[in-house]
Length: 431
Ligand SMILES: *Cc1c(COP(=O)(O)O)cnc(C)c1O
Image (tube, rainbow, N blue to C red):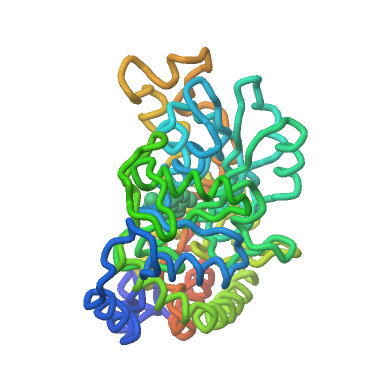
């Protein structure tokens, strides 16, 4: 049995094999950006074909969305969708207790109060039963997140929303390509938001976002919202009249051109990624005490982030705290060259902005309602348990050529599992 790297042995993943570029920038991307730079249409604020409208059309066609509106970021897409749906001061929006911070901030941007619901222990997505418990007469919308690329339980969320007359805005920032019963995520609720931020599955060379919807009126409202409330119509000069509250959340042409080139290679990348990840998870699933992420039946998982949960009892360390086991495994795996990390250090409701109600001054938007503030460290037992007993792998596996690297990662896991006595010692187990 070879010695653990943490104690002077040779690392399972050699140093010169560890670096992975993501996004993967190819000659087609460089050419697309340079062509856009040389073209006449560097702005998207007027009518007519330009790299931004081209990306909107191609994204909608590839994934099967009726309308697609390109905006500056995924966060802007969420905020604009809520604004277009009429969510405003005094309203409540239910969001998962585990997500990226933007999901919780988007309602606040509209002066609405985010209300957090606990998540499912397997998919890490919002729990429809807990959503239902948290509905009040102020609730207007639900934002299910397809976290890590796993589709949320859209059947039950749609059912809850319908029975209570709520809008559903899908946060699909981590999930382009994911499907739920054959339908593309983002198109199941009233609207969906994607992020093109450089680390996401389909990236741009910076920041970008897309709003998709099956509702032409909603798409129109988002178009207005992204550009000062103006209406841009084919064959008519821009009149600089603002018809409603608007922002400047336009996407720029270079970023659209870059993503358009990436989109053309998405299917080829995705095939490889699905194969690489399936092989990797298949090996890791054999290790006792390690719970690998899984795709639920009738869904496609986009594998944006791979989250592994560790179960001390199944590992043979009954009575050891999950945090202690996790920290021992993190140290040993990192020494072997596997960049395990935490994604989200706390449930969203523990974030200072929500606990201290640091909003628009004088406690707004919370001051509009009598909704209680979240109390740090309280509630959301599933989100807390998942955060305490799991680690993630990010970015490396998105590269279509990561198959060999993932085999080395699997070697590292198996090596660490072969030294379970050492893990037990590091985790502080009593022998
Ligand atoms: C990245 C992300 C966002 C925000 O997207 P940006 O483009 O970075 O604004 C929102 N929600 C989730 C779940 C994300 O991962």
